[in-house]
Length: 480
Image (tube, rainbow, N blue to C red):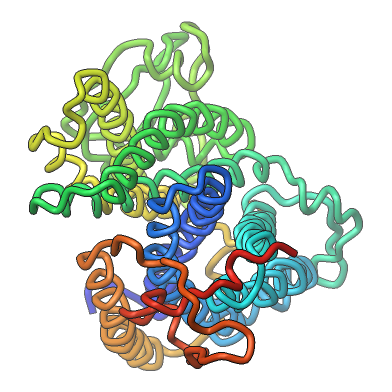
């Protein structure tokens, strides 16, 4: 069917499940830090707007966190079901790294998540703030270990191969492999940017519908400050990441650029647009800018960038896909920078909250960070092909060898279940966003103190529509 084989379906299935999964951790990372900032500002300024926003976004965080955990479990099982040969070959490296993630990040998050979501009126201010900070740190530690594992697959080092299996010999070299620092910073920053535009989009939606209050304005203001500062930083990190990729994975860079061959000693042009044709071995309809490819990738005007024809056909990534996925990511990045700069100009003119053209842009930019993250992961993972562990194990040798029928059935089942389950979860989360923050949502009362009436801590009460409305007692004012 469509010329696909069982291996192709296995790759599509993994790409589908991980694409769903990555959306939730990205928002979780950003929202956890955002909640820590909101609570810290509330403790420092006693401005109830920050408290109201904390309660509003903590509900959305709870739903998002739950979906992230569920979707993440599937990824671990797929290593054993669909990619057992990879697990047998490299499990001695990837297994411990994922275990470290559970022992550090997941335990840290699980230990303090209950206090963060249900302890607002049961513990003192300092302890609750500490719990929120610990959850935020836990999400970043999780990012650390996951990126360490994936980066080792991109730039492996610190190992020996004995009897056809990878044996770790230097864990520091494995963890801090050449691409890890750049990829960690790139992903963490992308999560912050994606969350900023998610928050800013929700604020713009309410402002466009006439719901204008200090909480909504604070949401938009904080989101646009984040976009203004972090989006340009992300571009700089991306440049360093590109230089690192050129050094360690030149075939990936050649595929991203759609660059097939160098001409004499001429510097490499930048192909803005075109259609890389893998069979014809050329980029059709190319729109080029002379010298710019060399300038961006080598920071000189005379050095050449490696070309695809310098690599055997069987070692070339699919340039048609990564050429365009990379441009989607970069194009959205420039649009994010533009949005941040426009917000600064409007802020100086005191029209940030009333400019409808800008608010519509902010609204439509809501999913831009998540789309850019997906495009970036498509670029880095498809650009690694045909290797599952770069230079050591080919993807074709890593699969479990299931039949075409088996992979077809499971792929269809994944698509149906994921759209039903996570579609419902996303729908509920967006319904919470549309309701917006309630003023005095976390107002303190004399109800629910020690020995008095309390609201039961139901499992999903952190995401309940009425959570935080009238169950905040005088114990909130206690200090530990």
